[in-house]
Length: 349
Image (cartoon, rainbow, N blue to C red; front, side, top):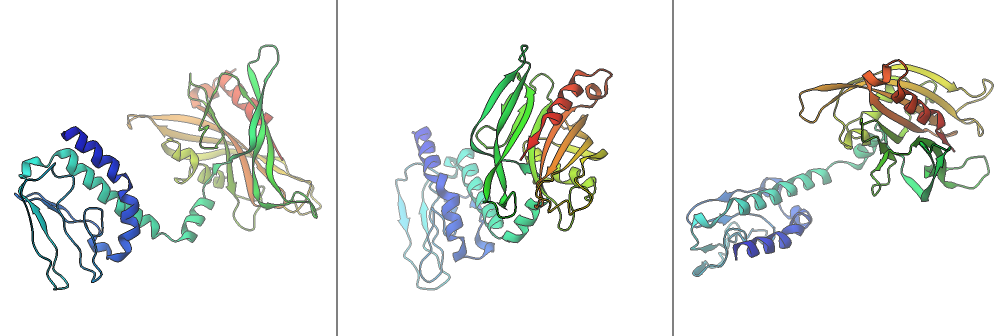
C-alpha cells in the first residue's frame, strides 16, 4: 500500500513545479519555501501550492502534507478565522514516524525546483541573449536528413552532406531571395559514432580514444570581422560556460589559442565583410586541459578549428576537433592526420 501511495504521489506532483510557478506571483518571495514541522502532528506550510490554497483575502491555507502518511482515522478541522493573517489548519493524528525519508525528499525537491524556476523567470531576456551571443552553440541541422557516402574502396571515411540553419535574415547576394539553410560538407571516419541525434547538433566521437568533432556557430563582436577579431575570442566562445561544448559534459580546466592563420583573406580592394562572393576563413590550434571523471586528474587536449564567416553577416561557423595532446603531437600521428582531414574537408555555403 505504501508503494502504491508513493507512485500516486509522484505521478500527481510531476506538475507541481509548473503550478507553483504560475501561482508564485500571489505571494512574496519570502513565502515561497517553508519547512516541514516534524512534530507529533506534522504540518507542511506551502503557500499557494497543491497542498495549500490562497483565499481572496490573500491569506494562506495550511493543510496536512499529502506525502506525510496514508490514510488518517481521526481528523479535526479548525474553523476559519475572519482575521486576515489567520490560517485554516488541518491536523492529523498520524505519528511523526509515518513521515518517510522518501516523502520528505519529494517535497523538498518540489520547493527547490520552484525557487529555481522563479529565479530563472526573473532574468531579463536581454541578459540571456547577450550571454548566448558570447557562446558557441551547435550549428543545428535543417533541411531534412543528411546524405552519408562512404569514400574509396577501403571505406574508412564517410562524406557528410546536409544543411544547417542559415543566419537570420540572410540574403546571399544583393537583391536575391532570403535563404533559411546553408549547405555543409565534411569527411569523417566511418566508425565514429554520432552523438546528440535528437538534439539537432552535429557531433561525432571516436569511441576508442575519445576524439571528437563539433560543428559550432558563434556571433562575432560588433565592428570586427573574422580577420580582425582576436584569436583569444575563439577560445572564449568555444569554452564558454553556456556553450554547447561545455554543456555536453566537457570540464575545461584551462585553455589558450596557440596558433592562428588566415586561409582565405578575400580581396584587398573591397570590404571583405560585405563582399557577396567572399567568405573569410581562418584556421586555429587550441591547447586546453580537461578534468577526468573522478575530478582529480587533468588531461592535455588539442583542438583544430576551421572557422568561416558568412559574407555580409557576423555569423561564424566552425568545425572543431578534439584530440589527446600526446597522440596529436606524436611523429607520424594517425590521430593528427585524421582530424586534419576533417577540418580540411569542411565546406559551407
